[in-house]
Image (cartoon, rainbow, N blue to C red):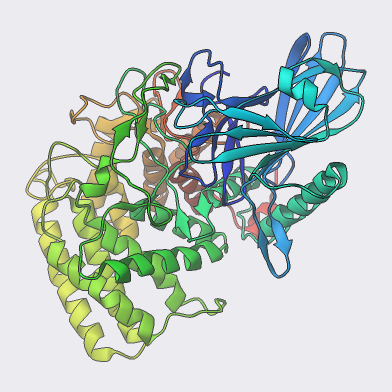
Length: 596
């Protein structure tokens, strides 16, 4: 495995990260934020446990792709004699009995393609973040891996002796492995695997068929959209920021964080991107999740992030049994940001809900009752808008009054005014809009520097990429001289080899060594909004060339080498790709009549 040339499969219950040679290296079971029973991704440079793989004798090549418009991964392994084995990996997801069937299960199907390739199938899970080797027991067609609190079962139609002892054998027929709950599989595995595969392929292709994709860069946008979908947890509607923990932002930086939780800010951006593609179901599910959290916690201030389901402790701690990605630790579980104040969370909820009041297609529309449930969120936003917080970058050693956080509070109030007017609460509408205007004037009075650009903090002169979002929020117009000046100072101070840094000052860990990929997409959109489309296009095409071999993006990139870093796949990065593509694309009419 080189860098982050990784694939991901999933079904919105579980997900697995897979290496270019087809090794499962990260599989949290039985849900997205659980114990990684396959954890070799963070096991150091040569982990001996924590993976599932198919080895080919004298292997000389591996080619990998997604089956078009699906989350089904194909890896073709070739040996020196030209023998080939085709490996299909997927998590079943399809409609059954009027609901979506999405068990916590991996399916691996291995088929002979050419010759009689000799293979070895190796399954070596571990538990407690690599600290507990499993006990093993056997049935006629399955192995059970027993951990302290759970059991993983591998059911297969290959020789169980070959699997148990990791013995090489000739692949002369398709074989199938079902990895998941400790439950019997009564059906014939060959028929069941083919059925699950066909129905999962059909599900994803129908889902993609319903997307409102741009004319240009369709393959890239579709792959980003599927990846975003895999980061949602259907059971509650939560959306994780990424599927992994502790892949460093840059080598040796110590910036290793657990992103397997639902950040309100990240979830809002994910909802916004999928809404633009007409995939509105994620928005409806997320709003059910977060409004339930708000009602359950009563008058308590919002946390920046939440577990994807109740009961998980988010206290940050180390996992010492895992050495880290390429040996670069520490590996962290939980996230200390849960105790921070991040005031933009209130705007994230209101803005995520706003489309429900305007979109006539939705079966459940925003109404007066939903507005009343959102109103207390706006009141808290108004109260906290001009108070210090950790900001969108979650500074651990300082708090300031961040312009973006204040602007998101303003956006919550402004949008509530428009919503109140929409649902007939005219007095509330007048109140919200008046208060929002006062707040807007205060934010701009205190954030615009003597040089005319907008600082990332009130009463300061701090440049960071979050200021590029202010025109999109409506706090200023795109052609406002203050926003134009902000683009210019961003270009001079944060642009590195076509990639934009978050900020250029030192934080708790020193100066950042990598560019946060979504910041580059924000800069691209800002350029496009002020008429600098050719510059934006060049930067966008450059980012596309730095995606991994399957078109996926993590959180960060080293601007000097182009090496990808950070948790994978990062929702922010896929969101940025989708939003920039939608901004820059030609219309379908223009594209079809003037296609090159």
